[in-house]
Each structure stands twice: as structure tokens, then as C-alpha cells.
Image (tube, rainbow, N blue to C red; front, side, top):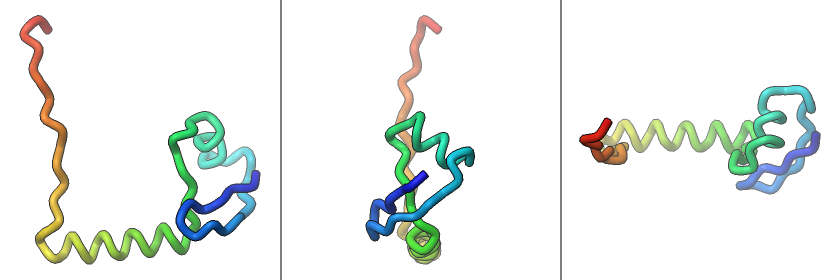
Length: 67
């Protein structure tokens, strides 16, 4: 299966029977990132997280009185 990285537009071949390929076929929302882009994003995220100014906000869930 040929896939294209969303960030750098490189085209790569992955195994058609792999889990990543199945996810890309069945769920169109999933996007493919090549190894270089994935590693670059993870390193930059870890650096931002280390600064102490990086916050993950969770969605506030409304409690339903009927449940």
C-alpha cells in the first residue's frame, strides 16, 4: 500500500496487511506520518512539556442526572 506523509509529502510503501494500513483504510480520519516527522514531533513535544508551560486540557463532561 502506498501512503503519503501529511507533513513532508513523501510517498512510502507499507505492508498492506499491517495494522497501520488497516487503520488507514477503515478509518479515514487517521493520517500517516513518516518516521522522521513522527520523531521530530515527539522530540519537540517533549521539549515543550519540559518547559512547564505545556498543558493538556480535558473536556469537561456533563453529568446526567438520569444515568
